[in-house]
Length: 486
Ligand code: BES
Ligand code: MN
Ligand code: ZN
Image (tube, rainbow, N blue to C red; front, side, top):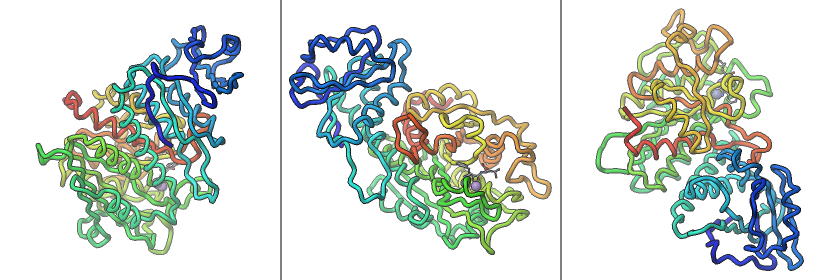
């Protein structure tokens, strides 16, 4: 699919073409401008919010009118869904080209174009190993005024949309295809060029570094663990790292000896979605040429039951020296992230750390499937962090990280236990566990379990959403405008 901007002033609606016309209630549309007969005005007035009507004019032009409701109630969230559904409306047809009129929307133009392009690309994505050929539109023209001024936004929307789809491909790939070793190979292959350095640590090296969490979780699997270290060097002004990313890379989470019931296990090839978000974000950040130095760390393991598995009762020593009692082998993500976070902080000293993980089912219980759970040791940044979510389309909501919660995970025989003492607040106990492995760097933890998979009626195909990718990209962009820290 190819997306272009087309100058509104020069546009002539011709026979055989398809034009999508957004319409706000009580608003006049200049039908004449598009050489549309007046009688269609009546159809416009009868449409209800969310409804789409397709009409063929006498001279063979197709108009697709879509009622966006009242202009004063419209917002960015509705726009994203609206434009994705426009595309899906044509998904089963083999159309050559459509035109979408983008003039009416009450947002800043450059945001509008970037979001339109990005969300069209997201809607066009479908993970498929099917032998059937993909259907859909080949070309989309976005009609706007002064189109020449927005070519950068067109490009940015494409880069971000494609990065999210790259992350979706990684998340959606079955565990038979993506093992820790394969994930490491993908990193090597994908991030080539002078601005990248990729280093893969194998089991022996992980052992030598005393990354006891990664080692323990991987023990039950015939697949060796890997620690993927991916550096993006976008500026030579400084040798320091601006941002450190950590992504949970569990290529399959069976639960281990505390094995999951089948309903809980079915999606667990997507337990590498945090890693996928890091890969997607670093790809986009490099294409946008952001002048930042970023290091991404992915602990990659498979969590399996076998006679060599780690067990409940085992006591592990994490990289920073803290000890953990394993109460439940299904709380594996925090164990590998503990190693990765403390290794990152000590060896790379980034100014800011973000981790992304499908960490807890409890985060889904807390928030439903529409917002990522965000935790931070810099609570004063709450509003900024939330706005990054709104602006990117990866919506987040803050949950507390108060010190009092620490009691829930105090160990009897070791410093910590890997699950809370009660069944409540599991997303918080997971996050507070991670906090023990950050010393003093500003840090954000994104529990992306809530938005890992798509839900109905949002204009996205079934499967992974690439959750977190857009958040990280927008975070990096904001980090550049120095206002962020302090
Ligand atoms: N990967 C899961 C969390 C998860 C569940 C992600 C559903 C996406 C969708 C994680 O490793 C896990 O198993 N968490 C347990 C923690 C519990 C044992 C304290 C959970 O959420 O049940
Ligand atoms: Mn688990
Ligand atoms: Zn997991």
